[in-house]
Amino acid sequence: MYITITPQKLGDNYPQSAADFVAYLEKENEGKAIDDLEHFFDQTGDGISSKEVVREIDANTAKLKKTEPRFYSITVNPSARELKHLQNHKADLKRYTRELMKDYARSFNREIDGRPVTVDDILYYAKIEQERTYKGTDRAIRENAPYHGKIVALKHEIQQIKSGKRQGDIQMKLRQIKELEQQAPHKLKGRMVTQGMKKPGGQSHIHIIVSRKDVSNRYSLSPGSKYRASQVEMNGKMVKRGFDRDAFFKTAEATFDRLFDYQRNYVESYQARKTFAKHPQRYYASIMGLPISEKAMAFKLLGKSGLGTPLMNIPTNKVQLVLKAIKQLKRGVGKAIESGSIGI
Image (cartoon, rainbow, N blue to C red; front, top):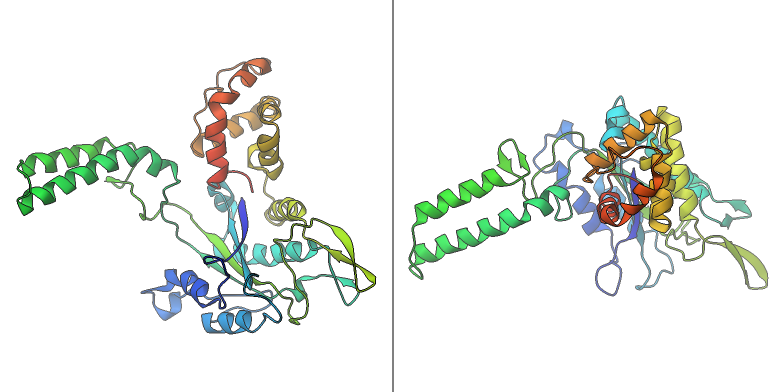
C-alpha cells in the first residue's frame, strides 16, 4: 500500500478552483458509455457528478489566502498482492475508502465545538480508477531507456534522410529499430514498453479530493500541518493543533488488514519502510530474522518490486553477510519503495 497526501499547487499560488483537478480525475471516463462511467462518492453517497464536486469544494474556502491550499489530494495505491486478495475491487475499495477517511479524521489533533474531529466534519469526494500507465520512474521504463534513446535517434536520422539533409539507408535503419525493439528487456504483448502505455493486470487505485475547511466552512483542517500534535494559546485559551501523519499511515494499513483479513508481510508494512529509511541495517537484519516462509515471501515481494535478490542464498544465521550487502541493495530497495510497490 502506498498512500500520498499532497496539496495541489500551480506555481507560487494554489488554484482557486478544483475544476482542473477534477477534470484530470475524469480522464478515464472519456469515450465510455453512460452505464460504464465511474462517478465520485463520499461517506454516504454514490453517483456524485464532477460538477457537484467542483461546486462544493470551491464554495468551502472561507478566509483562505491565495498562498494556502483550497484542497488536498489523497492517493491510495494498493499493491498487486493486495488487489489480488480483494473479492471485488470496486466495492471493496469504496468500503475501504470510507473507513480510511474515519482514520483521517481521527488523525487530527483538533476539536470542533469541544469535541474531536470526526469523518462527518470532513468534506471529501473520492473516485476509483482502474487503469495506470507507465511513467519514467518505473523499472521497465528505466531499463528500456537506452534502447528507446537509440530508437529515437534512428527515427530522427530517417526524417533527415527523407528531407534530404543527410544520406543513408532508410531500410537498414528501420531494421535496426526493429532489432532494438526486440532486444529491449521489457515488452508487453510483443511491444516494447514505453511511457504512456497502459499497465497490465489489476491497477485499481483511489483518488480522494478533500477540502481544507471542515463542512461548516469554519475550521481549517490541514493534513499538511507541520505540527504533529500540540497545543498553543490563542485568544487567551489553549487550542489543539496538528495532524499525525505517522498515526494515519499506520492505522490506514491496519484498517485494510482488518477489513479484508489480509496477512501482511514485513516488507509490505509501513514500519518496514520507516526502518529502512532510518536504520537500513536493522531492516535487512529483520528480514533475515523472519520465519522461513515469511522470509521467502519477503524476497519474492522485493523481487517483484524491481529489486534483485542476491541475498537468496545467504544462510539465515549469517546476518553479518547481509549487512555487507546493504550498499548494493539500498538504492534498489529505495526505488521500489518510492514506486509504491511496497510500503505506505
